[in-house]
Length: 191
Image (cartoon, rainbow, N blue to C red; front, side, top):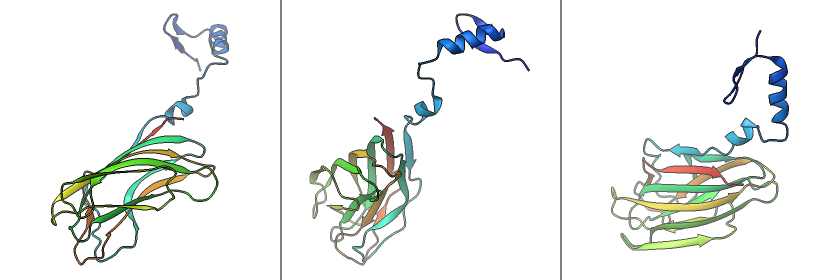
């Protein structure tokens, strides 16, 4: 078997001594492909409408709407959550992440429709948000899609895990509330 190393300034190199020298020259340089791959963004996109929830204020996971995080890593998270909720029900949205280990932290800003309104916007920010804490956003007429834009910084502590969207109605109302198709979340490692 012949090992061929392609070096732009030298062309194809098959001489073992030259290959050894080139590899020795790389010593001390960051050549870890796996490490670089961890900096690639991860993206989740909802191609279909979520499971309808009705007459409940109990927070529950939105199926498949999550991103994984490695231990001791900091991520930038961007997410647009489209939803259909009535004016009485409104919607509660929150994020869960591992509570075991230490050092977990979620900071974010969210922009969405104000509670009890159909068009007035609200901005909410949180520093050091606890896992599962919900924020409430306004609904509109049934069938009218609204959205919330989250911009977050997620510092994963000593235990790896998922950042998971949870949802519920703010006021239990017998009408379907859903997370709509087209919602997405993107995770990008920053440290």
